[in-house]
Each structure stands twice: as C-alpha cells, then as structure tokens.
Amino acid sequence: MGEEIYLRYQSFGSALELRDAVVKRRPIKIDIGGAYNHPPKDRKAYTAAAFRPTERELVFDIDLTDYDDVRTCCSEANICHKCWILMACAIEVIDACLKEDFGFKQLHWFYSGRRGVHCWVVDDVARELTDEARGAIVQYFLLDFASEKSQKGTGNKLPIPLHPMLKRSYDILEPYFIEHVLSESGLLGLLANKKSWLGLLNNLPRPANKVAADLMEKWNKHERSPVEKWTDLTSALDSLLEKRGGRSSKTPKHNNMSFSERQEIESWKFATVFRHTYPRLDAGVSKARNHLLKAPFCVHPKTGRVCVPIAPDKVREFDPFAVPTVGELVRELDMTTKGGDEGIADW
Image (cartoon, rainbow, N blue to C red; front, side, top):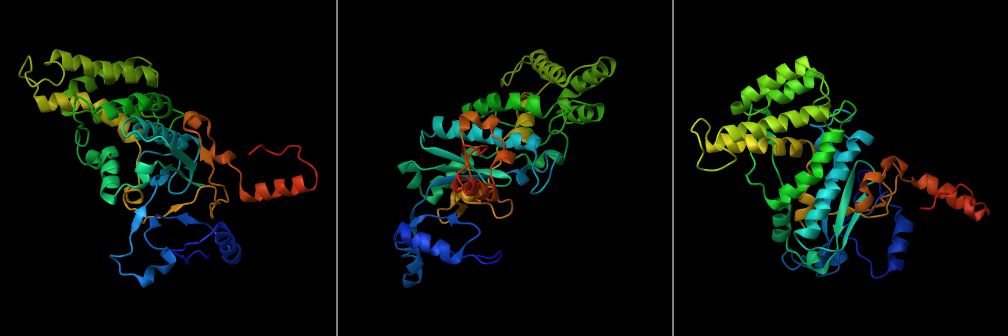
C-alpha cells in the first residue's frame, strides 16, 4: 500500500486469491511472516494465547548501515563496490557456519534490493525451531566490540584458543581484510598512510607498547606496503608472546606478563579483523517467528531493483548495481512481445 500503510496478517486460500489481492491493492512490497495454527486473517476470532506461529523459515538480515563505523566510503542507505565486499564476507561466514556447525542444507541467499542481503533456511528442522532456539543460534554468531573505542586495549579480548567457528571465520575473513581494508583503495586504508597506521599501532594492547614503538621507527625509515606492514605487525606480536612466556599458557615462563595480558595480545589480530569484517546481524529478525521479511523476487520500493538470488559460491562476483530494475524488465518484456530479443539479458 502507501508509504505509511501496512496490512499485516493477510492470508490466502489459493494462489488465485493472492493474485487477485495483489492486483487489487497493488502493494509496493510484500513481506512474508510465519505459518500460524489458525488463518492469520481470522486472528481476531481467537485469544492471544490461542493464536500463535507454528512454523517459520530461519531467516537472517544483514544491512550495510550496521557497518557505518567501519566504512568511510558510504553511510546510511548509500553503498558502493568497496563496502559491498562486507556482504560477501557475511555470506561466506554465515553460510559455512549454518551448513557445517548446524547441519542445515537448504539455504537460499537473496539481495535485499538496496543495501543488504537476506538468508532463508528452509529445512524442516529450521522451520520448526522455537523462538528460544532461534535466539540461541543468533547468539552463537554474535560478537560485541562496542567498548573498543572507550579505552586503549579494551574490547579486543576473545577467548583463546579461538572457538573452531571463529577460527574458520578468521581464515575466511583475513584475506578480505588484507585486500579490502588495509590497502589505500580499500574501505579504510588501515595501513596505507602514516595517520592510519599510527592509529592502528596506538590501539595495540599496553603490554605491546614496545612492538608499537619499534614498528613506528621501522615504517618511518622504510617504505612498506600495507600487506608487508600487517605481516610485520602480526609477526612482532607472535615474537613478543614467545619471548615473554609463550602463548596463552597459565604457567608462563617468566612473570613479566600476566595470563590476561598474553591473552589480550594473542587475540588482538583476531579482534581487529573481526571488528572490520565480521557479520553484523539484525538479531530481532532471526529470533521471532512472527517477524516479517521482504519476499524474495519482489521489487525494492526505493531502488526498483529486484530481490534476486545470490549464489554463495559466486558471492565475490555478485554486483548489486547490475541487478535489474522493474523498469528494465518491463522494457525487455515489451521488446520480446514485439518480436525482438537482441541485447536482452538472460535473467
């Protein structure tokens, strides 16, 4: 309907009923909710306790606006090829986790039509999950680095050794981080110029102050690429740990670094990569079975782009700006009805 009018709890007995309602009302978008124990259109005939959702696909919503603190190229609803790479990161990490850790098989990814992606898990066991079970799955993914800016060294700690899911995620994300976050042409250019790399070094944990000082001196004297700087930095932290009692063992060789300090140093590189590339979920969308999500293949009302599927194994090739708009599809349909099909995309 209009911008401010939403019709919820609509249900239809057949595809023909749905078609007739769409033709009559001409909605600008269609959202899908859960399956209920009674027809949603009759909900007022039942008490709140008697009317409840029974099934719902397990869904995930990831939006680039949630990354505004780590993308300098765009903000709010604006996107570009630079920051879109964060959606590729999210898809690869979440797709692997849902399949390998939870055993789900039927996952479908879609472009939201504007600034994000949606995942629909349609396995029988996923559709039957309670709200509590969905919340537990969401919690499994969540990482919080909100305190990172409050004080040097805070917000960087992760449990060491890393949980296997986080280790797999790091292996997926570090190449993206090196190629698309560190370089001058990337999201932030974290190691591309002096102002940027000074900021990164100043964020090292306090026990690594000597590492920061040594690298400042080295990088001021010698030209180093962002990739070389990242190697210098992670290697220096590894060496520091070996010199001062090894990795996070509770029985250090020397007493000049506590277990907590060693853990903070060891987790710093993981936390840094995660803070800039790790998936940021809209948890509320996934937790509740009565939550709505835009239907696949519908048209985004602001951009006119179709919510098309994304193949997870080809996510790096997906270009949101190449997605057809409804106007383009109408023009192509007109061309085919007139007998010409040259130059028409094979959607």
